[in-house]
Image (cartoon, rainbow, N blue to C red; front, side, top):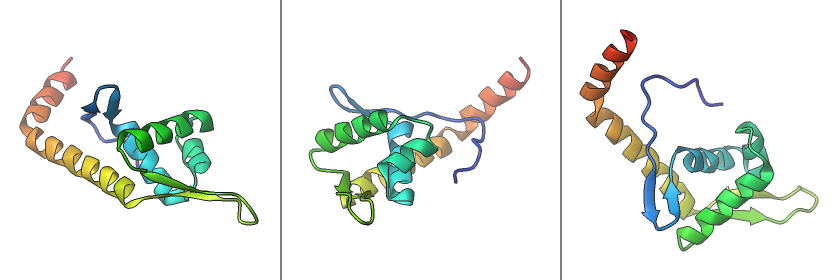
Length: 119
């Protein structure tokens, strides 16, 4: 399970193409699908409807030009979902970029945090 957020936070949203952005919600959804092997379980963990999670997965699969999540049809084992190599790399690249931004902005974040604490 993910830990509580630490402040300050930077919410990085990357507009990759017209009408397609990749940000913390999609990255977290991919990570949770990887952890659970299920779109519905990932959605439940995020307190998101299955319909919304499926819409986001479909949007990512179409927008990346190749699938980021592959689904496994139901049956005796109930089906599931896995990240493709593209999905794994997209989530990892996003988290890496997010960390680089946080490190690069540390001084400014400290200044903003100091002033916010005195408000």
